[in-house]
Image (cartoon, rainbow, N blue to C red):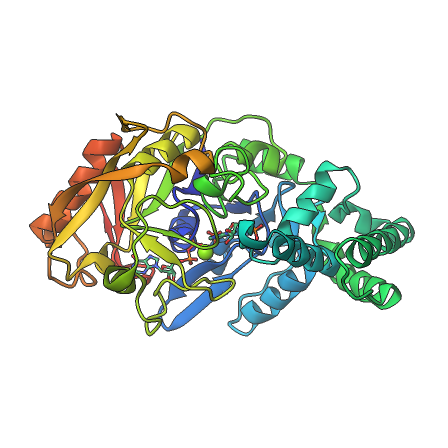
Length: 432
Ligand code: GDP
Ligand code: IMO
Ligand code: MG
C-alpha cells in the first residue's frame, strides 16, 4: 500500500515542506494535489533554504518524480521562476522529472488582479488572501470557463480561449471594480509565451500514476495549506478555495480510491494563522512576540509567501482532534517543539466553552461565526529551559518536553511518531 499523505493539521505553515523533504528520501513520486502558489513550503538543507510555492518539496531529492495534479491551480510564471531558482542549486526540473496534469487550471495575471480587488472590496470582512489569484481561478473552474493546462497543447484553440479570458476579466475589473483597464493584447501575448515554456511538461496524469502504483512505486502526496483552510471543512468563509484535506488526493490526482498506508498530520507545537478569521487560542503582547520571534531567525513566524507576520497562539487540541477526524489521521509529526524552550508554563487548549456548554470536540463544521464565540479552556503544563536543537533521541528531551508530547498523544489517541527540533533535514527525533 504505497500511498502516504502529508497534510497540515492547522491553518497552514505547520512545516509540511520540511516533513515532505524528509520523507521523500524513500518515495518515488512526490505529488501536489491542491492549491497553487499561495503555498510557501520551506526546505532547509545545510546552508541552503528553498522556499517552494509550486514545485513539490520532495523534488529536492534528485531521484524523485514530481506531479502537479488536476486539483491544482497553476501560475506558469511562478513555476518558471522556481525552476530557474532551483537550477542555480543544480536541481534540474526537466519534463522527465515533472509532470503537470492536463486538467490543472491556469492562473493568469487577471485572476491575481481580481483576487486583490475582490478582497479589498470586502472591507473589514476581508479574508486576507495571499493575492495569488487562487479564489478567482477556482471560481472559473467551477463556473466551467477556466483555462486548463491541456488546452496549451492545441495552440490555436488556446490562443482564442486566452483572448476571451482576458477580455472577460478586463470587463469585470474595469466595470464592476473600477480598476484601470488592462492592455489585453499585451497580456494575451505574454501569457501565451509563458505557457509555451511549460508545454513539454503537460501530461494525462491518472494513467502514469496508476502505472507507478502497479509497479509498487511509492507515492507521497503533499498537501498544501491546512485542514482549517479547507473549503468545506475549514473555518468558512476564512478558508482557501481548494480541498486541503486528505480527501483531496484522489480527485486532485485523477486517481480512483486506492489503499493508503499513512495519513500524516503535521502539527506545530503551537498554533499559527495568516489572514483573517477566528483563532480561539490567539495571543498578543509579549507571549505572542516570544512565539512569533523577531524575524531574526529564518524559522520565525513570518509568511513564506507574503512575508506577513503570522498570528500565534497556544496549541489547540480541540482543533487538532477535528483535523484527526476529517483527515482520518494515522499519526502526527510534531514540529517546532524547540521554540517552546524557555517558557516556565505552557497552556494547552483541551476544550471550549460556548453558550454555557463545554465541549471537547467541534460539533459544527468549522463555521467561523460559531468558532469565534468559543472560549478556550486550558490545562497548563510545566515548561523547560533547555535548548532542544541538538536532541536526536527521545531520551535526549527534557522530562517536561516528553510530558508535553505524551499529553498530545493522550488527548488525540495518535502517536507522535516524529518530533522536529529545527528546520534542518536531520534535526529530528524518530520514534519508530
Ligand atoms: P509549510 O507551509 O507547512 O511547509 O511551512 P512553512 O515552510 O511555511 O513554515 C514553517 C517554518 O518553520 C519554516 O520556516 C521551516 O523552516 C520552519 N521549521 C520547520 N520545522 C521546524 C522545527 O522543528 N523547528 C524550527 N525552529 N523551525 C522549523
Ligand atoms: P502553506 O501551504 C498559510 C490563507 C491566506 C488566507 C486564506 C485564503 O504554506 O501552508 P488564498 O490566497 O488561498 O485565497 O487565501 O488562506 N493561506 C495560507 N495560510 N499557509 C498557506 O499555505 C496558505 N495558503 C493560503 O492567508 O487567510
Ligand atoms: Mg507555508
